[in-house]
Structure formats: C-alpha cells, structure tokens
Amino acid sequence: MIEVRHLSKSFVKYEKEKGLWGMIKGFVNAKKVITKAVDDLSFSIAKGEVIGYIGANGAGKSTTIKMLTGILTPSSGEVTVDGVIPYKDRITNARNIGVVFGQRTQLWWDLPLIESFTILKDIYQVSDADYTERMTLFNEILHINEFLKSPVRTLSLGQRMRADIAASLLHNPKILYLDEPTIGLDVNAKKNMREAIKKMNASFQTTVILTTHDLDDIEELCQRILIIDAGKLIYDGALSDIKTKYGSDCKVSFVLKEPWKDFVDLAKMMDVDPLSITVTLNDDKLEIGFDKRNLSVATVTATIMKHFEVSDLSIQETDIEAIVARIYREGHA
Amino acid sequence: MKHYLNIYVKFLAQHLKRMLQYRADFLIGAGSFLVIQASGILFIALVFAQIPDLNGWSLDEMIFLYGYFQLPRGLDHLLTDNIWLIPSRVRRGDIDRYLLRPINPLFQVIVERFQIEAFGELAIGIILVAYAIPRLAIVWTPITILLALVFILLGSLIYTSIKLITASIGFWVINSMPIMTTIYNIADFSKYPTTIFPKLVQALVTYFIPFAFVSFLPATALMNKADSTGILVGSIVAVSLLSLLAYRLWLKGLASYQSVGN
Ligand SMILES: Nc1ncnc2c1ncn2[C@@H]1O[C@H](COP(=O)(O)OP(=O)(O)OP(=O)(O)O)[C@@H](O)[C@H]1O
Ligand SMILES: [Mg+2]
Image (cartoon, rainbow over the protein chains, first blue to last red):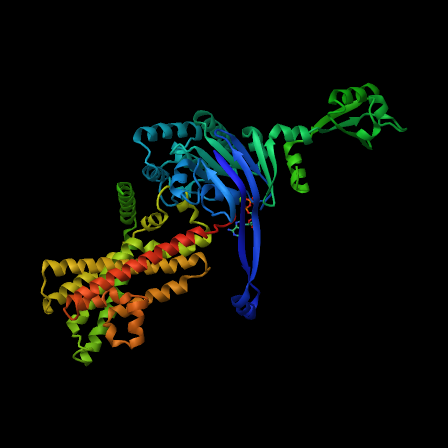
C-alpha cells in the first residue's frame, strides 16, 4: 500500500544576524542552515495494517506524514501510496487518503459543523446513500450529532477532534493518517477515539498510520511500530518484540517488618549469579532488580517471604514508556 | 467541470447566507467604498473645471474611462480577492489543507471568499459608464457590446494574474505584502489616459505590467480613438502570457512549499 525508499527531506533556513548591518549582510550572503528532518527512510506498509509511528519531539514524524500525504515534495528518494506518487498527483492521492492533524483542524472554522460535512460530501462526491449511512455510523462511534449545528470554532478540543476524524473518514479512504489524534483529550475521549479507529480499521480494512506521544494509543491499536530518531528509522517491527527485548527488566519492592542487620546472601538463597541481580536496602525498604529471563517474580517473592516478615510488596515491570524513553535516549533499538 | 461548478455554487450559497447574517458589515464596507470613489470623481471634476480637455480627452470621456476602469477591477475583486491571503496562508502552513483535498488548490483558494463589497465598485462603474455613454459618439453595435464585455473579462484576468504572481512570491519571501500592494496600485495609472504620463510609465504599464490593457486601451478602442483589433490582439497576448506565467509560478511555489512544523 505504501512504499518508501530512501526518502529524505531537508529544510533550508536562512539565518539572519541581528541589527541593520546583519540585515544588509543577510541580503548579500545569508547563512544557509539545512535541517535534515527526514534522512534516508525506507519502509513498506501493507493494506489494513495499523502502524504506530513514534519518535521524540522533532524526530521527523510530521514531516514524513506530510510527504506521504503530498503536502511536501521530498528532497530525495521515492514514495508511492497505492501506486500514486503523492506530490506529483495530489488529486488522485487525496481521494485515497484521510488526514487528521491533531494540532489544527481541516474543517471550516466559521461554518456550522454540518455544513463542513455537506461541503466535503460534494468535494469527494459521496453519494446520498453512503453519506447517510456513514453519518449514522460516525454518530454511533464518535457521538457527533450533539454538536453538528455548532460552528467549528465553538467546539471543545475533544469535540473538534472527533469531528475531524469523522470528516477525514467521510469518503471512506483507503489510508488514514493520524498525526497526534489524541493530543489534549481526556481519558474517556481517548478511549472513544481508539475505539473509533479500531472499528474503522476492522470494518473497512483501512490502513492506519498513527503518530502519538501517548504510548497507550500504540499498545491499544498497533501491531507494528516504526521508531524514528533524528530523521532516521531506528526500529521497524512488532511491538511485542521490543517488549521482549527490553521489557524483561523487573523490580520487586518489599517493606520489611524487621530489616536484617547482617549480610544476607539473597543470590544464594535464590540460586542465581550474584551479578545478575541488584539489591538495595533502605531502612525497611528492600528493592530487588532482576531479569525475568533468569528469575521469576514468583521465586523472588516466595524466597523473601519465606525468610522475612513482609508488610507490603509491589512489582514494577518495565513498561513500554520506559523502553521507549531508553531507546530515544540511546538513539538506537 | 460540472463537479467544480457544483462546488462553486455551494460556496456561493454559503457566502450569501453569511452575508445576510452580517448585513451591517456589508453596508459599512460598501459605504466607505462609495466615499473613496466620490472623492476620486470630484478630483477629475475639479481638474476639468480648470481646463477644457486633457491630452484630447474631454470630461465625459474621462468619466467613461474612470467608470469603465471599475468594471474589470470590480469583477476581479468580487471573484478572486482571496488570492491576497496566499502569503499569510503560506506563512501559517494553511496551504496544507488545500493540498489534501481532491480539487485544484487554486480553485479552493478562490472559492473560499467572495468579496461582496466589490458590488460597490461595479455599481459605480456601471453608473458612470451609463452616464457617459449618451454623451459620447460611440456607435453601439452588437460587436462593440461584445467587445466591451470581452475587454472587461480580459482586464479582470490581468488583475487576477498579476495578483497571483505577486502572491506566489510569498512562497519564497516572508513578507511579500509590500510588493503586492505596490504593484497592484500601479493599476491606478489605468484610471486616467495613459498618454498623460511620461513615456517610461506608458511603456511600463503597456509592456511590463500591462495594466493599460485593463481599461485605458480598451476605452480608446471602444471610443474609436485607436485600432480596436490591434488592442484586442495585444490584450489576448498579454493575458495569455501573464496568466500562464502566474499559474506556473503558483505551481512552482506549491512544489517548494515547506509547510510549518507540527
Ligand atoms: N516547515 C518547516 N521549516 C523548517 N523546519 C522544519 C519545518 N517543519 C519541520 N521542521 C524541522 O524538521 C524537524 C522535524 O520536525 P517534525 O515536525 O517532522 O517533527 P515531529 O517528529 O513531528 O515532532 P513532534 O513530536 O514535536 O511533533 C524539526 O527539527 C523541525 O524543526
Ligand atoms: Mg509532529
């Protein structure tokens, strides 16, 4: 469905010096600053996939989406979306795609929401029957009827986002690009939004590409993730793989009734290599860090509870949040 | 084509609906416009109180020219005024949405607004022309009427093209508004007989920024002061070149459009 080969995009900025003299100098030879926002990206996406596209701020996610949607012309490399080169044949491409940029609406600001829909119906030449059917469906999953008559500028962020999603789906696009569709939404609204995306994907085999900083979105929706860092693709694979690769670190914390005084050889008690675990004891708080591949949570708790009296205990597994933070920090996966 | 027409009509209906909602705005806009126009006509009348004619142009001919000048300008103003907003749309990244819809982006820019106040210009133009015609020795045949209408259309295309050229500069230059207004204001030369200006100005508005084709040359043609075929051909050539250049530049601008970060 989507083929991307060695895709790059550089932005050129002319740095201006301050003051009048700087301005005059700027006319003669402004300092050219080139930002490589996307750097030699290659991937392909099949029909019906839901892809999580993640990366730190400024990594190049939105820039990639803009090249896929035809807004930006790539500096180099190739991109085809359903056989169409987006920036060369924008009109054909536009019929195949739906786009939501969470930070800005695609709707007509001053018009009542319903008018935006009727205009879009005409623009995309949606038949009356399809229109009625889809509007009913959108109301079922996105509850838009309650504010259909309000001008878009008066909608709350969550309402506007639902409206934007519905608008992007009105022509039943093959591909849906969602750039931060849950930004600023409350817990319930996020949940509904995810439900809506799931339903659309299930009912119409819509291919979805989703960028987000909320990793719950990813866990809920995506089988496959792409991680981008400084414009380069650093991971392309299943979410579960990255979890097994990095997610085996585990920590169990206990509050002991009577902390021990002398040295206790926990490693020996649990029959593992002392270097494979970390043990810290602060007053009555004991923390044991280990790798789940060597040691099970059950063994650790059972051992401690057999030898000591425990008043409280908690288990912290490394969540996707921590894994991704680590990958962003290290710049590779 | 039918598809585009349908969308055009839908947008027009939206605008009329909104205009009815904001009647006061419309009246204020049209009113202030009338004041400006009245002072312009007063100025001509004052000049002619001193002299009987200007380079062979009588007061009535001047009024015809002045009125005729308003028609292509009003038409352009009414239909394509939104082109002025292209540079600010570029700066804010609002060109994105045009590129995401399966319709010609320039068409989308244009239908987004109808400058209803332009009816003020059209009204003034029609009143002045109607006033001047019986006082002039123009022989009206179906051909001259057709010619007059064609010239109005061509004239407004000159406006639109020049506006689009200057607006497209906004893809490369952050603040292109001064360029736009300066060039647009050069059109004012066409309100008066171009021959009263220095040769350099005449050449400028005929060959370089061809505003002379907007009203001065068509008016001379209609009043039989010059060869109308030559002016018609000249006008068609000027409009073709100019609109081609304008559309090319706009497409080039779209290709180098950088959007904004988000
Ligand atoms: N229109 C533009 N002009 C100049 N530089 C830009 C433009 N758009 C993006 N950039 C730069 O390109 C880089 C990538 O930006 P992009 O918006 O793609 O990041 P992102 O991954 O979407 O980040 P975020 O998570 O903050 O939305 C950044 O360094 C940004 O400053
Ligand atoms: Mg972004």
